[in-house]
Structures are given as structure tokens and as C-alpha cells.
Length: 141
Length: 325
Ligand SMILES: Nc1nc2c(ncn2[C@@H]2O[C@H](COP(=O)(O)OP(=O)(O)O)[C@@H](O)[C@H]2O)c(=O)[nH]1
Ligand SMILES: [Mg+2]
Image (tube, rainbow over all chains, first blue to last red; front, side, top):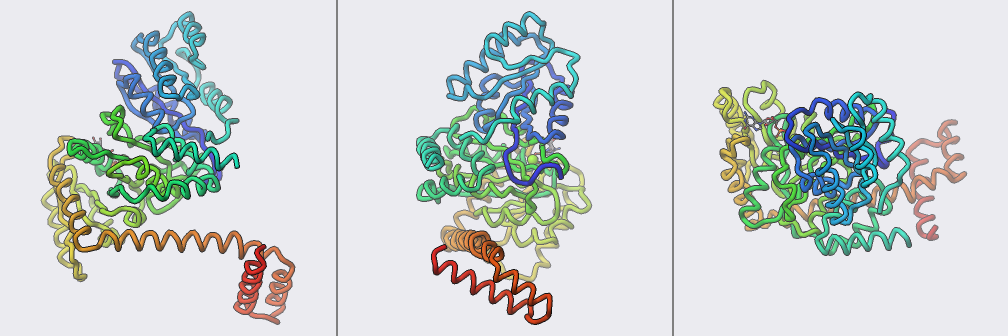
């Protein structure tokens, strides 16, 4: 047992937005995060930004990891950031991955997306980033 | 003082119906025992209105799908619904994949439904340590019904019956050990049996096994648990399930059983808190005093027996309490 039974866990909501039906990649990352001690709330395919944000609020996650292969990233990410603001939950960190061109990734990061993992990023890199980004935070009140 | 102010903010938010505040409160309960006490003390007067339904049964039986269906029907009746779904944490990493929510996504944007996934964090018994107090939070949030879904592994998920007003045991046909599982105490806690996946060919056999088991049960019951057959994925039979829940609720309310169940639950809770305080605030500090070390030495040397030493330890503790230290 690496972690004590009590104490704070990093909580991440993993969602798949848009129309494509592939969730193999998300599931691989979800398992790797679990094995790194993270509580992953997996919400399945075809999530709308409204569903993602409501779920993230109820689950009180530290971050939302959004996977997108359908090309709608330039509308979905900003919409999620906007809804989080509306719900008074702008402290929930948004990151993502999928088929997102480098120049779009830069624009999204300017807009407030914390990190975009481009295709080919290793699972270890993603897990390392999550631990680094969220590991130091104390229980929010 | 910082803790007090923060928890008062959360309480105000919860009473105003804020999902964000309720969610933060549940995290606090999961992570910080001391802050959680402050919170519950403030919240407690506003609890006691929600009706709690527990679902337990083997993994894959269809509990999450049924919770989703029950929530749908309850919403149709104008009821608000809080849901706490517990899944196991990995004993190796402490992490978890909490996936019950996938089956309930149609309720996610409904402001009168609140769904929380919870890791059991090593706690045995089918729930998490925080589940009881999280239930209180959803109660105070104004939810008419709170539904608890247990982990669904192991044979002894009996804890849910200590929290629930109505306990539903979900089984499925064709699982050789499915009816077997019931023998390990589940029989006693079931108010309603569901055989889900009634579209499966082994349904008749499982239903007959279960009826036989109920028939052989020697205890006299004022309430005989009904057996409801459902196909959760098609919502077949779930109206009958909802009716069975309402009927059990009426039975408890009319016969005074509900008050009695809740009184016993609170009694257990008070005794548990007192026992923990005795241990943490009286016994443990007393073991750190020099008198205790001398007593243990005496036990080692056979000048004192362990019972006499324990009596000394308790007297020491009582003195400390009397002195207010
Ligand atoms: N054929 C059939 N499949 C079902 C039924 N109810 C649930 N399932 C499926 O069984 C699987 C497990 O269901 P889930 O609700 O997650 O079970 P849980 O582990 O008990 O919460 C899912 O793939 C469901 O779609 C049913 O009545 N019939
Ligand atoms: Mg489930």
C-alpha cells in the first residue's frame, strides 16, 4: 500500500466530447492515472460541455481532462471554460488531448486551457504533468 | 477560526441549494476529519428530511443502471434525487476509476439531481467512511431521496442497511454464486429483492432459488421482501420497483418502523463517536503517561495481570477527564 487510506486524493474528470466513438486512448490514460494514485471519474462518450461542467462541479474535481478527435476543439474548450466561470468554478483546471494542431493548441492555451497533449504524447508524460500540476494542492475549502 | 468560517460558508451555500458548496463539503468530509466535524455540527439541524434508498449486489448486476432508472421515475414524480455511488480504490496505488456515473449521464444537467462518485478508500463494508456524512449533506441540500450504490464486491456489504431506510438487493440470473451470496447476511438486510437482467434465460431458475431461500427463512417478518424482476436497460419493471420502494416506505411510516430504524442508526452513530473520542482523547493519552509504562512493566514481570492493568488505565483516564485535561 503506497498511499495511506485517508488523506486527499487528486480527482480528475475524464470526458470524451464530440461525436467520435473512440475511447481507447482515454481509458489507457485513466488507468495510468489510477495506478499513479489519482481518483478518475470517467463519464463516457459524447459529452456536451454542459454535462462535463455539471459533472465536474458535483464531483469537485481538481481538473477536467478532455479528449477530442472530432475537430470541434476550438468551440468545445472555450465553451467549457466559459461555463466553469458561470458556475463559479473557474479554479477547476482544464486540459486535454487529441488531434489538435500545434497552432490551435497555442490559441487554446492563451484562452486558459492549462495544457494540450498532442498525438504521440506518452502516457507517462501526461501522468507526470497531472502529478506535478495537482499534487501540491491542499484540500480546497 | 478559519475552519469555522469556511464551514459556515459551505453550510450557507448548501442551504441555498448550491451544488458547488455541497460538492466542496463532501470533499472536506472525505479529506479532513476535523473540518468535517465542524461542518456536520452546523448542518445537522437541517437534516432528517431525505428518504434514503440503498442498492447493493454483485458487480455488473445493473445497480448503476437501476439507480439511473429510479432517478428518472422519482423526477417524474417531482422528487429531487441525490446519488452517492461508491467504487473501490486500488489497494496498490490508492487511485480509482469511478465509472458508475456513465450510466446516469442523462441526469447530469438536471439541477434537481446531484450525483457524486466516491472511492471506498480502503474501507470495507461496501461504502466509504465519508458516505454517511455525505448523505447528510445531500439531505441538507434538500434532496427528497438519497440513493446509495455500494461497491459491489465481497460478501459482506451490509453497511448500507445501517444508512438506508429501504435496502434493495440486486441480483442477476445465471450467476452461480448470485443466490449463494445472499446467505452471507444479505438475506437479513433486504427489504426488496430485484432480479435484474430478467431478459436472461436463467431468470426462472434464479427466481425459484430465491423464493425457496425466502420460504426457508425461519424468522417471522412483518414485511416480506418482494421479488421484483427488471430489465434496467429497457426500464422494464422499474415502475414496479419504484412502487415497491414506496410501499415499503409507507409500511415503515405507518407501523412506526421508520422512526425506530432511524433512532437505532443515530444511537449507533453516537456510540461510535463516543468510542472514538474515548480512545483518541482519553485512552491513547493515558498510555503515554509514565504510570502506564510502569503498569505494563508489572504485567511483563507477572506482578500484575492484564485486566488489572486495563482497570488502572481506565481509572487514569477517568481522572484525566475529571481534571479536564
Ligand atoms: N441485458 C441486460 N444488460 C443490463 C441490464 N441492466 C444493466 N445491464 C448492463 O450490465 C452492465 C453493468 O451494469 P451496471 O449498471 O454498471 O452494473 P453495476 O456494476 O451493478 O452498477 C452494463 O453494461 C449494463 O448496460 C439488463 O437488465 N439487461
Ligand atoms: Mg455500478
